[in-house]
Structure formats: structure tokens, C-alpha cells
Amino acid sequence: MEGKLINGIQQIGVGVADAEEAFKWYATVLGADVQVFDDNNEATHMAPYMGGKPRKKRAIMGLNMSGGSGYEIWQHTEHVSRPPVNAVQLGDLGITMAKVKSKDINKSYEFLKNKGVNIISKIVKDPSETACFYIEDPYGNQIQIREFDSWFNYKNVNIGGQYGAFLGVSDIDKSLKLYADILGYHKVVYDETGTFHDLQNLANGGGKFRRILLTHDDNRTGGFAKLFGKSEIELIQSLDRTPNKIFADRYWGELGYIHLCFDIRNMDALVKECEEAGLPFKVLSNPDFDMGDANGHWGYLEDADGTLIEFVETHKVPLIKKIGWSINLKDRDPHKPLPNWLMKAMSFNRVKF
Image 1 (tube, helix red, strand yellow):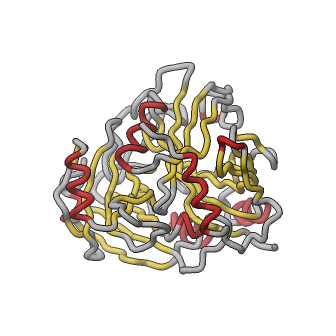
Image 2 (cartoon, helix red, strand yellow):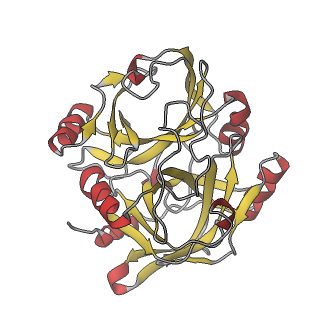
């Protein structure tokens, strides 16, 4: 294998005050009840983004087995995590919102309404005429629920996993060097400028923006590519205000969306490509880093506005933790997807509340 492979979005990081409580919410409300890992190791490599020293933490990854990406729920355990200095507004620099897939938007709306979720908009249509609505989790993080057509197993499911995010940027054209050229999100679903009906109920949603929704070719391969499915990145640039940087004057891992993580193969090739593009990795683990129940090679770079993007080359992942059954991906054909039955075995890691 010569070049890097982007298999899909693996997870979005969510900084919270209580990881166990947040995992329960994401499991019972958004269906991310398969616990991939529960890691209490000290965060060492991210010290440059945490005041220059390692920090104790707890991180739980939850996955919705209907298809899509997971949530890495991340908690500082040696100090109280702080919210953003300024309340997050649409267009601020960083990850402003997760995208979550819906099989039937009306059923998803009623399901979340009956769960008592804070729904902050009625069902609307985005610029692609796709039905969606917006909610807020109990921790102030906004989420777009949107009809989507990429599923792994959707029997009796209304809401699937996370499949992308809104990222606030200062210059969309400059940001495309990473998201389109390197990560392969070069197919434009829409690229529009103005004010937008679907955003009106969000903080600063009535502002003027340029929005570009990007997706990739239908050729993602690799072990968990079928489970992660198709994904999208929406870049949003504020045109009538100077945006704030969401993680200004705070430690990484504090409250809010902390990173977007991609599942990859051939880390060395990716590191080299990003370096040549002027987007060097800022953090890089050793090749077989222990992540509690899983291990792999991971690293972070900053996009053009300093938003942290993570990449993980997974080597071992637990399938049935109760009997210690894991799968080694390191020696597998990087283009070959895992059998469906093998991925479905991860359902044995489901946590019931």
C-alpha cells in the first residue's frame, strides 16, 4: 500500500463534565449504546493543548450500530471543564454542530419530542431540499438531524449515527485544501451564499453566510467502511461578523465539540502528504498506542483555522469484550471490508440502562 486511505469518519469528540452521564444520554436518545472503549489513561500527547502538561481524563466511545460514526465522550477528571468564553454562534471557528442521520424525519422528530429533547426548530429543508431539524443535547451542543440514505442496519431504527459536522471557517476556499484535496470531500452538494431559512432558530442563524456541503465518491473501503458509511462535511463562513474561536483560552477536552476523527490506513503516507501541503501534524502517537480496550496509531493536525482534526489507524478493536474477543486489523488487506456478521458482533458490547 503506497498512499493513505480515508475509510470514513470514526467519531466526533464531545467534551463534557460527566462522561458516564453523557454516555447514557447519547446511548438512550441517539442510540449510541455500543461501548467501544472506556479509557481512564492519562492524556499525555495532547499536553500542548492542555496548558503544557498531561491531564487525567475519562473517555468513552459510543457507537450506533445502525450505521454511521460514533461519539468520543471526553471528560477532564482533575479539574472542572469550562464552557467557551463566548457562547457559540453559527460561523464561529471550530466544530459548531454534529450531523446525525434519520431514516424518517417525522418519526425521528416525534421520537425525540417524546424523549423530552430540546428541539430548537421545526422540520425544515436545507439548501439541497433535504428535510432536517435541529436539537440541543443537555450540555448545550447543537445537532442537526437530517434524512440520509447511507445505512448499515436500519431495521426498526429512526435515528442513526453521526455522519459529519458543521465546521466554522474564516475562508472556505483556503479550507478546501484539507477537506477536499486531502480528505477527498471534493463533491459539492451545494455552495450557496446568503441567509438561510433552515438556520433561523440557531444562534446567529439569521446572519449572512457562505455554506458549502461536501461529500466524497462512493468508494470508501477498509475494515469498518460499510459501518461508517457515507459522510459529509459542511463548511460555513460568516460574512457579516468576525467569528470567535471556540477553543480560545481553554484546554482541549473542555466543554463542546473537541475534534472530528477520521479512520485511516497508512499514517506515514498521510503525515507526509499533509506536511507537503503545509498542514503538518501537531501531535503523533507511537505506532501502537494503547487506548484501553483498543490500540492504534493516531495523530492530530490543525485545519486552516486551528480546529483539531484527528486521524486514527486502528490496529485492534474489541468485538465482544466480555470474552476478550478482539480483531487485529493491522495485518488485513486495507481495502477489504470486515464481514457484516463480524461487525454486528460488536452489538454484544451494548450497554443497557
